[in-house]
Length: 227
Image (cartoon, rainbow, N blue to C red):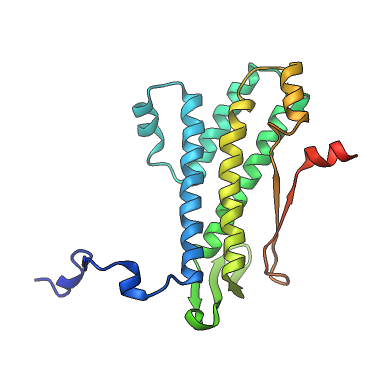
């Protein structure tokens, strides 16, 4: 006997978003962008790992599909280190492994920010005030019970979405250069010095005392040129 037949499957009403809720609301749209940008990042991580596996596309998908996000990054990192052993340690005058490890730090920070948002409980009249209180409860062996609360708006959430989306784009654009064994070729050095291959760095400063994510975008190549 079923007690909740209404929930056996989603109820497809045929109504549009505007018909159901009116004008799209900023807070939930920003959270949706975080989810979509993180899905894009996970896809790029899997694609990069697939290229290093050097097997048929379907085989690579079978090997990676059931891995968690951290698992996919672990596979990518391990494969890259194996691949890098047979290459020049530098590329365009830059340390190949150092660049990759920096990208990995952005990837893990993206996961941390995504989990912070999607694993939180949200309270507040955000449809009217356009602000919401994020509350997350954790109980870890290292620190015991911990409750995090902060007020956020759509702008702060979009900062997080952009950080994650930017990380996906940097990995997608820069990874082929990292795995291309060009050594210290003058051509690649020139491209990097002009900023054609240099990636932008994103930094997030986050703490309970200063909960607002502060994103700083730096074009180091441009700074070097000005200096």
